[in-house]
Image (cartoon, rainbow, N blue to C red; front, top):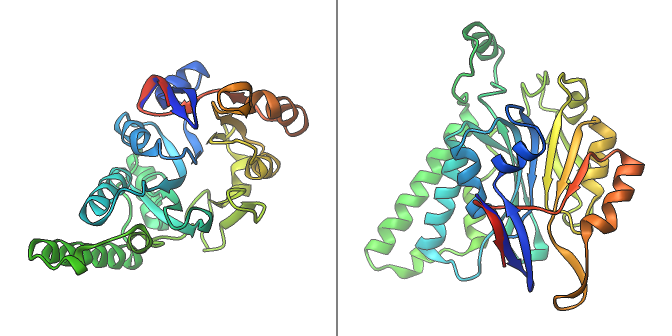
Length: 298
């Protein structure tokens, strides 16, 4: 949520706020139909900034990373705060995936904006008549999920307050189960069944994401817009999205491949960007990460 630089694996990386990036690319006022973020922890700073300034997003595909030093009440508090920012903007989880490569310290969450895509036809008609989005629709699945989560939070807090440390210890492999799937793809981009949840990309770790009704994105006017933060050498999802949707697709990754620590480095954007543009129609590959400021991180 800033423009600047960060340090990553010994590299200083250029980062910007999403609002700054959209201005740079001439996208101010446009909806980002699909925003993918796999940014190795920067999501904790970027997400509050993104939702705090009201950028219009259709679907959010977010990989959440938990530092190994977070446990118990601190872990729950931070997760609750992060997810509340997203939930308060009308987003609901339509898919959850565990990434075993990170030993349960990360998980994949796919959200759909239910203010933009109400779940029921009646709600959609109401939104159209009002000419403005309505709050996210509730469902039995959503209500039950969030009620159950609140009960668990209350039990954990009570145990901690009463000194029952065995019950208030909470690690990431337990915490993820508090945020299960809570909606379907019903109503997204004209999909009125539950068949619109599609896995895009290959089956390798980090090479695929779940998207609601991706084929319908191709018919949007103006042309659909996709931002993918985090690339490295994993582009199966990006290539598959380009082939499926034909969206204006941008990749963002400031990191480089280095022969030794901090020397003889080649940016991934320079290594893979030209081929992705020439062969698959990628709009751009930017040497930028995302955070809560404009500048650098380490």
